[in-house]
Image (cartoon, rainbow, N blue to C red; front, side, top):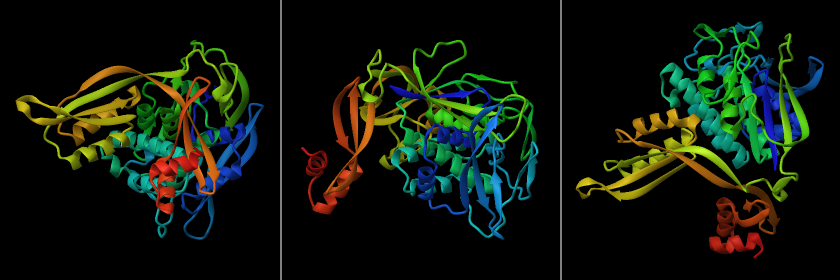
Length: 440
């Protein structure tokens, strides 16, 4: 089994993730091509090879066009990354300086994707892959939920810093695209260094970690004080929260593995200690891909099941509740009919979530359902590895997912959208489309 490991001894930010994953092997032109499918103009993405502390790596730089005059501003996080905790209620339009790095306003005259609702629509309507789209939405959902909690506003109303919105999109969607291209079977991470000192925010000085970052790293093993600067940004924390399968605290063995390749994402600041993010491609089980034979052919996760019985919500309201629960990070949502006291018909709402998303799911149930309370049950979920590939023929190209039990493929299924497309084109059933694409 091949997996990625994030070493965040100097923290993590969105641009450093991009640099590390490009250094690990993602093709920069392929990444740019995918990002262009967003249809958001006014940016350029370059990758510079540089060093920190004698270690060579890649620095990702997002260049943003000024709306007036065609000038460019450089987004150089690290790190230099704009901080998302400036987004929530930030309404200032003059540039400000953070740790000696200049952040510019965006002149009026060009619409920016500022709100979470707008950014979500941009990603949902883009042409990027479904896997990258899902991860990017998950990352941004976590950031928006954290900002909403910090500033006491609704998630839908969270506004992102005007120029920061675009480079946030490039950082987040770019990281999601890179991970989708690399397709690791698992992602692990060690302790995350948050940094120290104070950080400049829209409302003044705040101690590191900033409030949004602190919410996003809940449940992770973290350390502070290794640097006197903000080292983990909300973007970096959200990428980890949405992507990492297992966090490994210091002193705990990560098992036996083979190191295959290492990538370094370089931060902008030059500090006494190397300012870089290390991401390793590793192999466990003695072989790569589906042929590997790990100790157990399934993945085990400790999750939480939230359940409540509801008898006074319409079908439309229950459908909206399901949508909001998925937006809040639910892994699965099901609704089953039941009979409640006094023989009233009702619905059992069951929500499966990870421990780090519990507060968001709890808030969603209380706000968007008629439930006055619900049950929480610790559960252990076992799941088999799923691999996605593409098949092509006279029908075009289609995506196919295969479930593996260890090194044995159990069953495959063509994605619904591709089956439906062929069925519509040829006037046939979904079952016939499946047979044509699968060659059976």
